[in-house]
Image 1 (tube, rainbow, N blue to C red):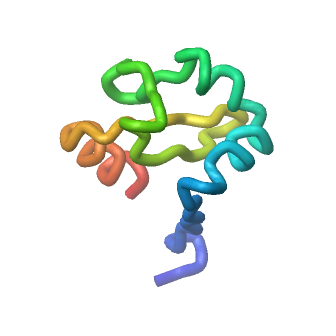
Image 2 (cartoon, rainbow, N blue to C red):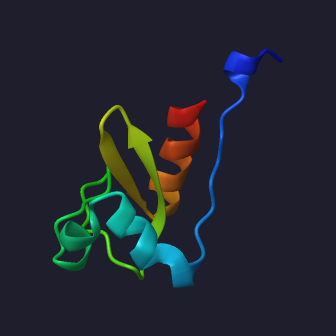
Amino acid sequence: MSNKDIKKLNFVYDDDLEKTLKQLNVFDDFITGGTRCKFCGNIISKENLHSLFREFENIQFICDSPACIKKLITYIK
């Protein structure tokens, strides 16, 4: 496996979610329902947030739908 094949994963605890979202400048959108799942378009909330990642200059959110999680795994490979 070469270095280019290694992907870095960061984990955020629930208690740190607000701080992390503020650091990423997406907190206001998140709490007002302005963030949507990259794959299905559902509004993301604290209750259905599975993951988030940076894609170019944007922060992408993924909901906890099994279909979207499966798409995410395929997408990041």
